[in-house]
Amino acid sequence: MNEDEKKLLQAKHRLEEAQARDRVKERKARTRRLIQEGAILEKVFPAAAEMELTKLEEALYWALR
Image (cartoon, rainbow, N blue to C red; front, top):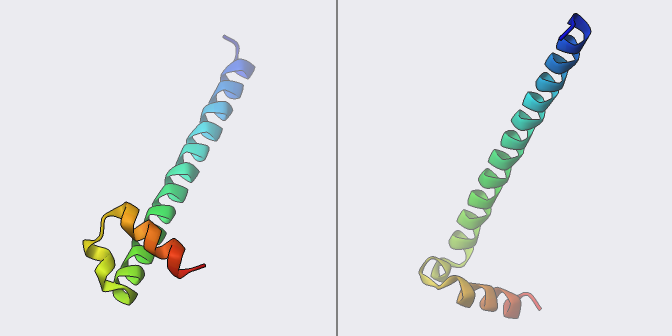
């Protein structure tokens, strides 16, 4: 493997690592947002904490129509 091929391979790996970091960052941001939204839902609608997910989903669909 010559020097140009090595540099190209290194650049490819750096790009892949940067993309992986971006995916992790996006996933963590989504997780944080979902937790915050769930907390708001439980604050506004305390019964949500005790409901099954399917029942909660139905209640929200009904309430938001």
